Amino acid sequence: MSTLQVDRVETPRKTRPYGLLAAGVVVLATVLVTGLAALNGDVTYALGGIETAGAGGVSIWDVFIARPIAYRLLMGALDLTGDAPSWIADRVIRAEADLLIVAVAVLLFLGLRRHLDKWPAAGIAFTVGFALIVSPPWHFLEPDWVAALAAVAAVGASLAPRRLWLGALLGGFFVVLVVAVKLATAPIALLALIAVALFSLRRALWVAGAAAVLAVIWYLVTKQFLPWEWLWFKDQAELVDDSPIHHGLRRIDFHWLRYGLGDTTILSPIVATAPAAFAALIQRQSGARLRWLGAAIAVVATGLSLASAYGQGEFFMYHYAVVPVLAAAVWGGAFALVPAARVPLLATTLVLAAASFVLLRQDGDWRHDHVGLVASSYLLAAAIAAVVVWTVTARSVPWSLGAVVLSVALLPPVLIGAPLSFSMYNYKNPVSRPANAQYEALSDRIGPDTPVLYLAFGSINYGIGNPTTCRYPSPQWLQRGTLFARVREFRSYDDNLKCLTEDRTARYLIVQPTWFNLAKAPPEVQGLIDGRFDCSDAARVQAPANLIVCPAR
Image 1 (cartoon, helix red, strand yellow):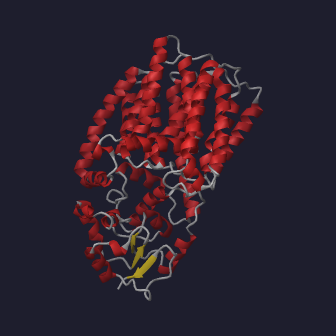
Image 2 (tube, helix red, strand yellow):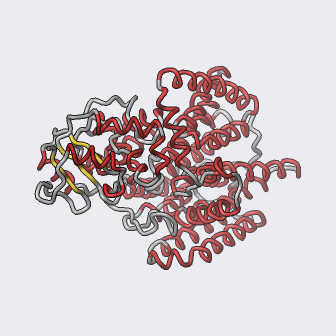
Image 3 (cartoon, helix red, strand yellow):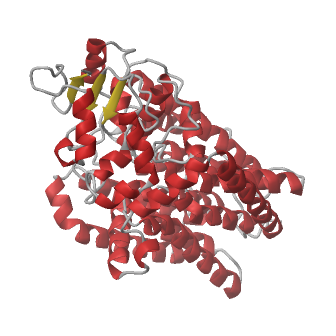
């Protein structure tokens, strides 16, 4: 039995097909606009490493791209574009990911359908799936975003099967996947279990038990057959000095967490509607006890959605990837289950979306200087909206209008030219179209099948595409060794160094000086490079301005 108490929910009338058709057109247009954007640099970093090392004979099980094997396998499965130009590859990979999201949304619908009426289940599943498709470009396909997708799948898989054991097994698998794509996203797994418990506490407990068993099996198998995975994880954790695992609780971390949440809210105004949506769902519960329980669940869910960003201590925008998805889920739940709250909820959403459209087009320096004021304004608007939704009821509006408003609310961060963040890291970098023609020209110049050694961020690999036999296609440990002497003591660094001492197949060295400063490399690394490649001005190959290309001696 469902634990949610809701008003009677209307079924869309068959006599109003034009509204649904218009909404469908708006939704499709929103998806197409979203698809115009290039994949973000972190995603192309991963794809570039998998592609170029794979072309050089390195198995996806052995390649290092600073991402766990579960994430690498997913990205490898999506990367079916071969040697296609980047503008085609980006769109194909995005379309494949969109199809995966649709499948997960259908799974969520099937799970919710066993506990809710057909139209509320469909509305919530659509809202969540749509929010995943129209995600901010710096979220889309990041490990944190994949964790959110897996969490949605966990909820659907836990609730859909009639047999309890099957739901526990499938749900447990996806709960483990939430953690397997990135250990820092473990709080999102707890968020998924809470969502399951809202509909069936018994199932949630069984899923948690199954997930615990499967997690132990996953750990033992990877520890036995992929020992490097855990060495890399240990060394990666040592790199992140700002993580609370190194220094505990600090006021400055909560300060940056708050600023990151403010940036996320301005970028994705659907987040600012979450308090109002929570209020609508809580207010409709009968009795003070259920309302207090609902409020407690809202606070815990919000905390868990932020815990991953706090735990990583870097506060990049994609660390908040689950926040807009949770907000969209609550928004969809309020719209579908509480018809009397639809008008104030939609009005709030439109006002905040309009504000984000305007604010994201402001100059980067202005945004950076005024983020405190803007974020506080959004917080005030969210609080006012929650009070209004709690106290005001209105006549219901059509489902089609909800889809249109949701489309408007999700659009601000995906439009070409919008910033990747409002005021924090990458706030001056805009959303752009794929453009790797200069790298493809370099590949043609040296021969597309010629093996090379990259001393560059993996997105350069993605653009050029030449194979490398180094299992560190973007040599993070050598690069970090130019910045931090302690990294040179890591086992991962020693293994990465073998690309210079043992690999003799590379015919060219491709260096990105802004990422890998040769002058700051240890003498040992400089000597190995000088002994193998000629980087004199006379010998260098014509290349894009941000690269140096040196032939082998």
